[in-house]
Length: 487
Image 1 (cartoon, one colour):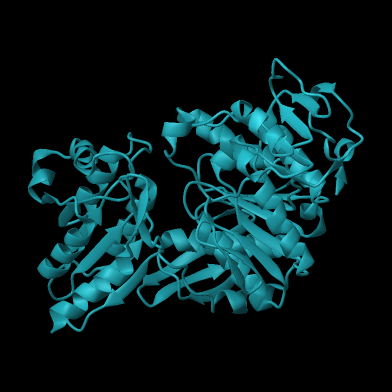
Image 2: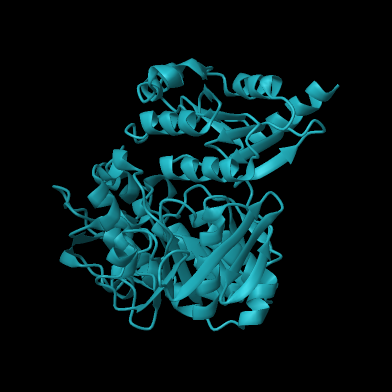
């Protein structure tokens, strides 16, 4: 139990009706989860307005309500707290309710368009290998040491986030490495948390369906660094043109990494093959199992964070060399006839370009590159023609297909992608809305030494169609198909 007045600290209250000297058993923004003595926070969402469920929450036992607009009738025995922004208030309330778990460990947030999952996961695996108790919050999974907790969003809601951090601190975790999405920052899911460090990987056009403009998207990412405390560090990719922008208003110690710039943490890529990367890191030679320039940046970020957290340099470099690639990130299988099928989460223009350029750098020139790519429904439509054009530019053959169409017509999405292709590119492009059949076709037409890139879904084990998540695993399907063709 918590006293209401204690958990309202920093909630930006404009009005209170009723007593705040009362016990609160739990907090929720879902009226269906309200129990006796709950605090219900009414949030205006994209699809529903929590203010419409205040009466339901009270009937189910809520003794206190946080809202932006008071109802016409205020029942006796219920405390109403009016605030400017319910989402922002919930962030502080959740942190207060769970006794500020972010202050009991070192919380490092990683943001950017691409590389968040890989960098976050590599950091978790590195610090586990160094012998530390750690937590992980990522798109793929959440972990408390060796225990796995399912991930439903890149960044959990404010209540789930603080619950998860509490589970970590109860388990003795010293560090938590987490992805921080632009949506989460704007929606105050991490408001009230104290970060020990923030990392910026890169930024390219993405999520414009939500943020509307690229400038707003940049501002959203920048919030992580604007809110860092003085004793934290802000580590940014100096090779990205927006890297220095992220540092403009931060109070934290400013640090940079890069392959091309005069950064604090510099690296040099020496060799990039399917066997892995050979690069310099911290002035030392490093051999890594990871592949591609983009992973060289991820490793630099990981190294920089480890140094900022005062880990031993030689021990860090030794452990980094043993780290494996993250599921669904340039994950590949080879067949007896030397066809290489690569599954990658690349679902943004920049990520797709990076993966395709990596393949171009590795190929000898005689092999074909066959790319299977789609775009998600109910998401940023501006990237669709760009994705198709990039696939066609860097591939010998392209198969446009479904990603997660959600509530959109898959063929309509493909038609939008086609608008980015010129007549020459159209001649080497096929359209097949059934993703399974697209994978089978690519495997059938591939010959000795060819590359097949299956982009967009990576680690995902489902395909979302009209609100239903159907079992679908790119890697499993390509393996099954290749085995069938071998017979």
